[in-house]
Length: 164
Image (cartoon, rainbow, N blue to C red; front, side, top):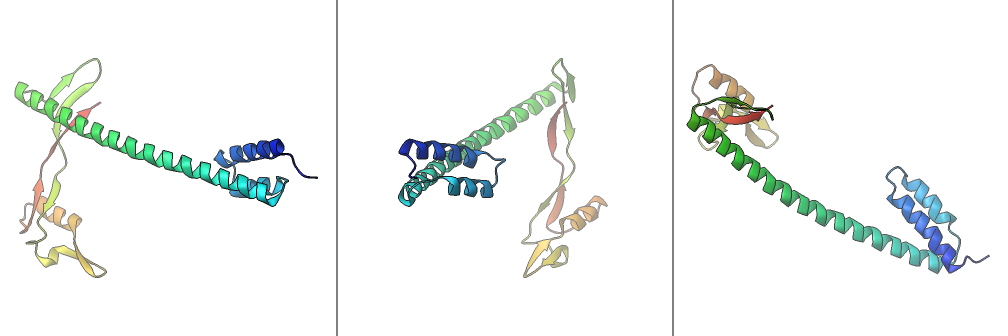
């Protein structure tokens, strides 16, 4: 018996719901597709529509992800700027810590970060990674912490804002 057009549309709408359900695996979708009765041309036509709808949604999600990434980058920059202003204000006031009802803001030294100039760093401070040299940052940092000097490397003490 040939399925009516509205029956096919209803079956494909249920199939579309299955496709969008993250808890349903592809095998269940395939079973649902095979269960739809009707002429091959109608099935193919509806599959094309299903694929085009999924592709359009994927493109919309990717576009939205890019938009959200741009917004997150903007907010990252704003946060860094405001944190810098807060550090400067605390430094200007001669305070290291301020306690409020919202939380405590304090300025403290970050762990030393390694700054390298690989152009002048001696070769003995590089690890061999297949086909290229990579600075042995952990080894270099440990040596610098003992007070020894290494040409092309130094420890840099940064500061950061902590909000608890």
